Figure 1 (tube, rainbow, N blue to C red):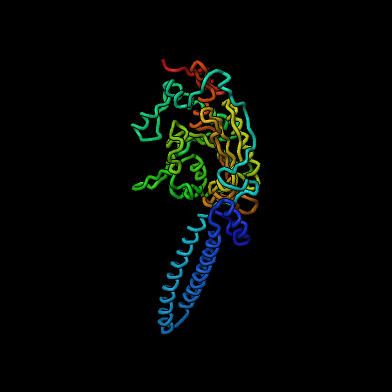
Figure 2 (figure 1 turned 135 degrees about the horizontal axis):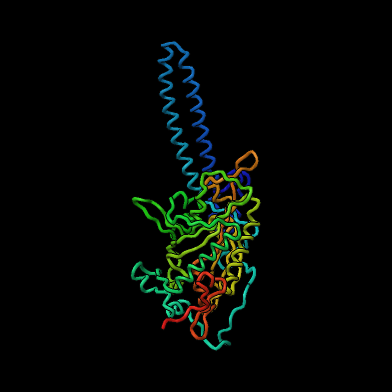
Length: 423
């Protein structure tokens, strides 16, 4: 949800933002027109309601004959009030439906352009020269199959395409990765949290995921009407809905959950292996803070993501996402992309978004700001996820078929140093 007073005062700010996102600029004027209609409808109802109260107060003071006349007037007035209330409710609903389609204001710092117009911020780590090492790297699925750790065929047999089994040391490697993410978050002041994976429609809508990404979300309809989350961000955002928080210090959570995505918009892309799958695990950072703190905290979340990826001992780069590729709730977003040797390119491993007050307004999450209650800011960022396994396997493979386990993950695997090919 956007700041309606700001929209009324400076609609051009929103027109420019919608244009930078390559979304409907006309929607701004539609929301303004519906806002004007709902306020006028509300005023008409409130005026009629006030008149009704005044007439009711006079009724008890009149004589019997006058009361009969007033009773008829009050009946007609009551009908008018009910009709005007229904009009006001309809106007409110139409305004809300339209206003909730407006995306967050894009940060002045976000690059212009679309999906391919990101700005490369930095590159970290050394890309291996496998040719110089004397062998051709295998892709992550082949590696996973050779060590008996990834089984896509049986996953498809049980659940359909883009599902999988992780077994043996690959399963242990994922658990090690998620445990390290939770522990790293805890060391940096985040509360480890295991979150629900089913949420109510109003929580999913409140985070902004039902705008342009609705077709990627699994929905359980009758008799439950719930959504399966694609990130624990959703549950963590809804955790404090309709609450007033104490934000003398930012409130930080590190949420672990299984996640589900339809990947409806990715038909024909990355169907090989575990890059784009329908079910995966993830550790997600989520922060509630004062609005003036969000830009600084956003950079802190990015540094934490960089630290975690550096612990994986893989080459990666940081990109600043362009306005036309931002999700509805994000004002600005950074992605960290890991190098995939067999693809010869970088692939997304983490993202961190500053959602400013957008989600808090939709979910009514406020904090004490002196004598008033104000909407807080929310931010999110990835600390680990199943997709990282693909990058780790490809970058840590050895000529003799072994896979070297990153040093940081070994304590969570009993000190084990290598994953061996199956006999």
